[in-house]
Image 1 (tube, rainbow, N blue to C red):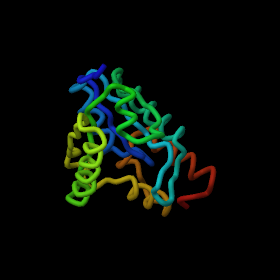
Image 2 (cartoon, rainbow, N blue to C red):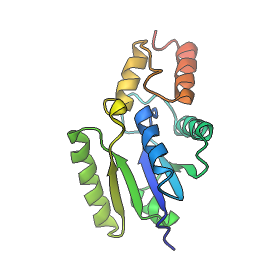
Image 3 (cartoon, rainbow, N blue to C red):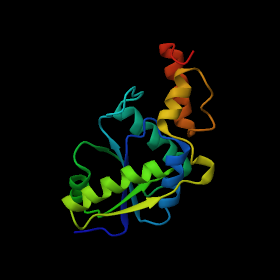
Length: 170
């Protein structure tokens, strides 16, 4: 049975930024359920956090914001299979710049080919976060910069612990 009042927001979220969090907070009142699907493995070079760590950070920030309709789940299969299994046929994707759109458009068309019932909705983050990306946050962190204006509190705390524990970012 399909749930047309639910949406999946997939990504690596390594780490989640305020731009990601902005999309979650804006999708939450629009849908009965928002499933944040955290990619179990990251193809991106220089991953900072495991899937479990990323899910925990997102879960803590979502709970702190009071979003009771947001679920965090690992994504360890094709997105279309994840959506089919959960009976969800709508995906939201964030688009910051034109190059994001090119990539996301290609992925949306591919997913549509694999499952014609799947729809993708593109959302732009608040203009205050349009320049923020996970890769930028990782770079700033690695060189000891201040990431507090770019990430939610649980992520900032995890970055500080990682920096203190591993000596990174200094």
